[in-house]
Length: 209
Length: 209
Figure (spheres, chains in turn blue, green):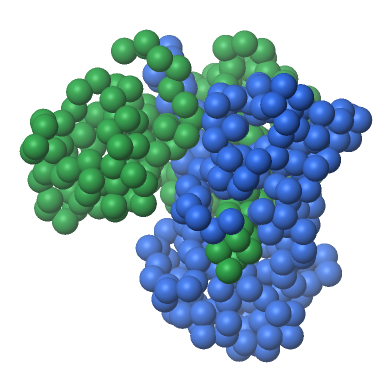
């Protein structure tokens, strides 16, 4: 299957298709066309077919896709057929909000630890996990076999925290800090800028009016 | 200019290009090719040209784009040549984190008000704004000429809050709640699911390994 480099936009759309298929499955719908998926999520049907074609042939021409089968394929492609344990570094407002974010659990991501260096909040409980000091990072990562780290520390601390996560065995990092981070080859890094979402709105408000 | 429907993925990439151009500008770089932009942000150069072509001709063949000029165009297309006042409904951990999120300010989004119905937190200060009750929604929206609302309330309250925002004059809504919301024509709605970002990582960890 590892023939093409899959564009990140395709991966994000697969994620969206899989949510839509889950909804259709819950409604008892058994087969679906690429056009119906496209209309349901707001992209073109050629785009849906192209995105799915990266991973082989799923549907039957003229019949469409079996909802449960395609859903199962997408979940497997996205790596969501298992639970991923996650560690959060930075227990400020954003870190705490992410630790409590229900959507992660629903998709198989389990926040197992949240660390901070602020003695005022270390020991505080966020539902079933407790804020711990940075010193336990390596222990928690090996104890829970954690591959994914989320960084919500201030910019000036972000690279140091990244280096420690990588040394401790984390293979993928989601960066919510504004800092541009460096990671060695073999580690996946993704920068989240929440204002991009607002810019889609300001574009719509400006450009179409 | 309003000839084509612009894909949302294009708008998000324009936002990313504009950030990259700002960095280049800060480094004193004056001209740039589509290939250099493409390499800098990790997309194909044909994609960059196609995205920009929606909005007319910017560059000169063989010379490329003037960084400051293209940056200015993108900022204007994205509606970022002005300040957008924003209201947040829901002052829990996520809402508070967003109210304090520096990245919004950097791109011209100003959180002017944050409301909640929980008497325990109403009156609390988040830097320079104070958490206020839902009753002041209409007043704050007209007072600050707010067009954009961010929703971080629990699912069961989200549609009611949406309806109130729309009645109060908000034209664009960013929904962080898990609820699928309905808005009337003429109002832009965008759903943010933070787990999509983690799924890009789980895909990379699963599919390429």
